[in-house]
Length: 156
Image 1 (cartoon, rainbow, N blue to C red):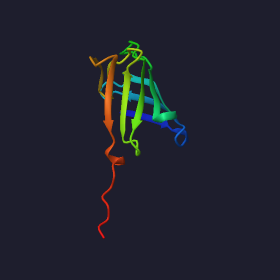
Image 2 (image 1 turned 180 degrees about the vertical axis):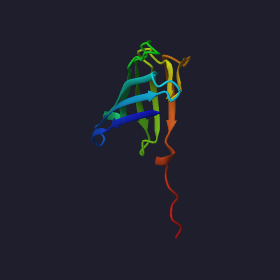
Image 3 (image 1 turned 90 degrees about the horizontal axis):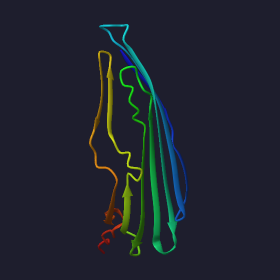
């Protein structure tokens, strides 16, 4: 039998055309008892925290950052530390009256901690995997926002 209890919430603060910030913590507890061998039981905590921020600068410039903290308790079966911090950021400039074109330079996985990680717990099965992912990189992007594109004019 596996039970997982989770608690999370989200806090936001924003001022139009000035800044946007959000914080989302999540606490989770997992408990699993084998139905075949009831002496085998696995219990652990995880804590995730996601923080996002945008600052809107003069001349349609924008700075964005997001960071995700993942803390996972070691278990009796898996005693490897898989705590990670993923930090991404970008700096960009918006163009046109509706600001629907964005040119940005983006840095992903700034701390170079992007490990692929997956933990699955069922009553008779416990698995933890790590796998290769794309780690730290820079990217230049040109983004067109279709949602801000002009709408069709009503016909007379």
